[in-house]
Image 1 (tube, rainbow, N blue to C red):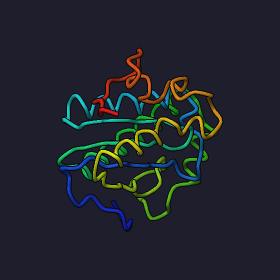
Image 2 (cartoon, one colour; image 1 turned 45 degrees about the vertical axis):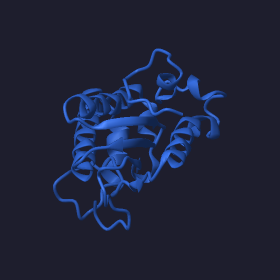
Image 3 (cartoon, rainbow, N blue to C red; image 1 turned 135 degrees about the horizontal axis):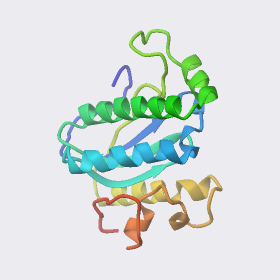
Length: 178
C-alpha cells in the first residue's frame, strides 16, 4: 500500500476504495479498458472469494465497496493484473499515444515496469455500519450524475446501480439492503 495514511485494520469489515489513474488520464473512456476492470472485479468475486457490494468505473478512477480477509493483497493483485492487461491491450491495438503518456507518467523509482497505470495507494475507508454503507453506495452510484455524464445513475453502464434496481447488469455484485 505504500506510504498512505490509509490502512486496512480489520478485514472483517467492507471498505470503500478509490483508485485513480496516473495524471488523471481518462483511459477507462476506452470500453476495452473498462472491460478489463469488469473482468477483474468478476474474477476476484468468483475465484478469490471477495465480496463486491458496489462499484463504478469512471473515466480516470474507480470506486468499489469491497470485502476480503486479505484485502490489501487482493487490491495489489487487482491493480497489478489490470495494469498489465491494459498495457497489453493498448499495445495489441496500437494505442501508441496512450502508451506514451503512461510511460511518461511512470514513477522513475519503479524500475520493474515501463508504464504506470495506477497512482500509488488505494485509500481504503472502513465502513463501520449500515448508514455509512448506504452513503458510500449512493455516492458510488451518483458519481456519474455528479460529473454530468448521465441524468440518472442507472444510465451509467459501468456501475452496480442496475444490479440494485434488478435490471440487467454487466457483472454480479452482492446486494446490500438499502
